[in-house]
Length: 283
Image (cartoon, rainbow, N blue to C red; front, side):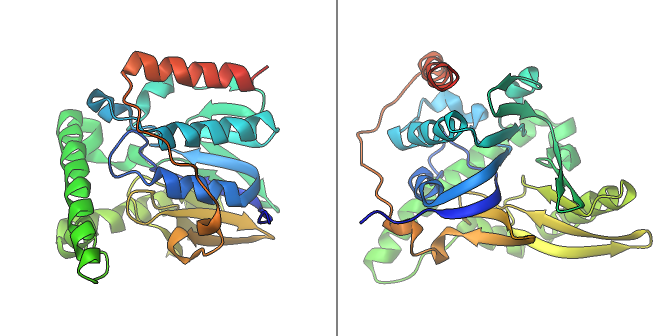
């Protein structure tokens, strides 16, 4: 018996990092298969263009793309908000195909309240002024996630739970904690100055919903997290926001994703496949 899809008004996902070893594409695909969204916002770093040199592109990663283009073919509104790992797409901001659009930000009216949605890398001073250093950090982070997967494999074999090395590092390093706080407060301050009710970001891989106040007012700050560690998203339905967490979703885990052999594609082969997919669904 086929499981009924859950209706959601708006879904925001970010920091999927397709094309990296740490990406949980299968779990994301199960989640996407389990829902029926009216609008889907891909809030940056969906395809990790920085890491394409590794030529790592499993079939499950392409299946995510195919599912999203299938939603576009059905008329679901899909916004691709550019991030720093997929910044090459900023050349195509304004591109439209059916219900699909590439943008730098999205402003939506949600039941009379304005939501400002963008990736958030604009607040990352290191990214702006030392891009080579940030890319080096991205490679290190990806290596850490790969090491973490081996650690968790043996940890589970020994009957212990999973651990997140990067979370432990982020939570223990004061500068990382301060960066996250500054990021959230900066986004909130600008949102308040522009009379938004919600500011919705990604980038820092930290799922969150909280009210932030300053002398000028208050705003609801939201972050969709990521699909590397947290496997999280934001959902807006019936006038209410919530953080979705795959690990707590027993229904999504029942959706079958057919296993395929891994395919290793070059950049040109990957983009050719992507363009073919968009052309097929854009007729």
